[in-house]
Length: 355
Image 1 (cartoon, rainbow, N blue to C red):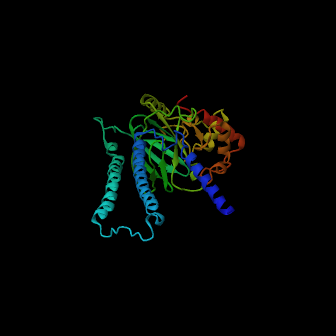
Image 2 (image 1 turned 120 degrees about the horizontal axis):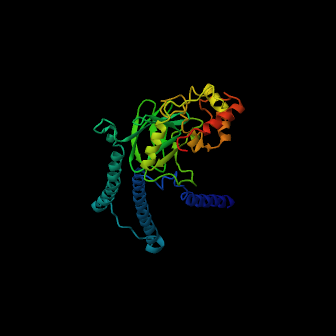
Image 3 (image 1 turned 60 degrees about the horizontal axis):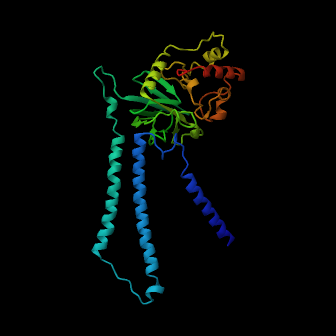
């Protein structure tokens, strides 16, 4: 008796949690509140699938309940013999045709949108000057960070993707080590990044991200493929800007060409960075691909290491002992002293193209 009661309590608790948790989801990360055309169309397919499944469940449940209550032995008598329907062509047609119709209702829009989402022919279109007309971003997933290269603009960022609103943004996806998966839940579905091939797709951002998440102003991006001990920490952020603001950001990034850290600087952070970190990390947005994340916009970022609060203290802790906060990453521990890590953190916070 008590055992059965406990099971009912557990069942009730799970039911309540399901109801409440299903309503959870902030706009900057929720797939149920999409902020892009791709995400909205994918959500419509989800709604259609749920509607068809719900219709089937309701109809079958209704037939079952009607049969259960209407034809009980206590009502129809012990000698009642149900009508035999074996070999009924009418019923065979009904339970064959109806499922086919339901499958067609689901399959037609699913196939339509599948081909639509995979259409990346615009990536190769050029204008009269031979320049690509579509914005393309090369995404490289690494252990455990993201690199975003804008080949047409000649710039590179890391950990924060910046995109314009109201236009399609095309992505070339690849991984440098193991399989990852590129996913911005509020904008659209995920796609794998493989080591041995490039996957392509596009997303569209319908609104600026400035007002999201209590002023943090970013959409959240995730790695959706189990890739190692820090898989859950392999986050990135996305800033969606009006086209004019995006063009200004591109110009500011291009203006950092030639920027570097001075080994002879009187600033301890800059000098230490130049001597210990510059071999892997660039501070110019046009410096090309590096071993570590490009840090040109570190002062503009939303998070340290993708998930920690963006403060000098967290930055210093991360620099001094990164494996403590993101196990399995390739950045060495205690490469500099704690004092030097603090100085480098102060220097990195000064790197900005937006302030």
